[in-house]
Image 1 (cartoon, rainbow, N blue to C red):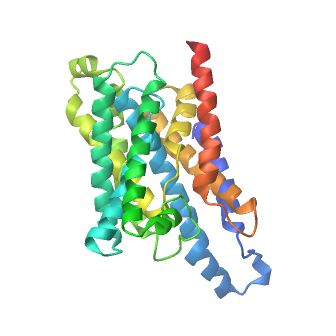
Image 2 (cartoon, one colour):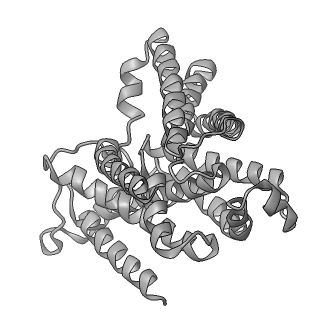
Amino acid sequence: MKRPHLALWTVFILLGIASILIGATDIIFFEHTQSNLWLILLSSRLPRLITLSLCGAGLAMSGVVLQHITHNRFAEPSTTGGMDAAKLGILVSLTMLQTESMTFKILFAICFCLIASFTFTIISQRIILNNTILVPIIGLMFGSVLSSIAEFYAYHNNMLQDMQNWLIGDFSKVVKGRYEAIFLLLPITIIMAFFTRHFTLLRLGKDLASSLGLRYKTITILGLILASCMVSISVVVAGSIPFVGLVIPNIITLKYGDNLSATLPLIALGGACFTIFCDILSRLIIYPLEIPIGLIAGVTGGLIFITLILKWKKTC
């Protein structure tokens, strides 16, 4: 195993152990009966750890694919309107179908997220901008418009308070029987891993990539579909967790380059580590109560985002 992989796996295992041990109920092995211990682990702690890992990996991978499609390092689900569109899709499914079905929420979220991703991609390709930073700013503005529409829609349907409760990233409600949809990310990850070379070529631009035999439009559409599916499933299961797809891909890319065949496993593992770390912080700051992980990830990711922008300006 290569050294970066080994280091990240070590961090992941240590964070995973810490995540299992930390909670409102302390896990002290000799103080619990075997049945109670397994109940805590299997009904709450392990489902939470699995969901954290898959959400973090999925959001990080969707972020790097969006960056290759838009040719911008600051693109990710929360800076392209994808997460806000997924929220709007969930609200529409709840009001139109009058059902809490996870399947319908995921389908509506994917459709709305995909439309938003296509719209942002067209905007970013049609508008020629000399300043790279302006692209995510436009994306944030686009996301703010979608978020405002979602809030107005929720207010109109008397769902505003509920929306604030379950659309912000929060893993406290992730228990056995309410997280299994997250396993849908596994086949999507396999498909994405199969097309890593194709997504890497997108970075070269349409003309050069096409001259190398890449079906540029087809791979772009495939990338948007896979990224939208990952984002939507994560939002439905755990809520909105910003900046994972921005911070992790940029850190890995700066050190190991743009070849996704080599870096995608590192990006996925880094995303998992980031979300687990933020979740541990959210449980410790006001222990035994919890702060929603979306707030911790927003603050942490936002600070790193600003650092990346300042670093980019110094290199210009």
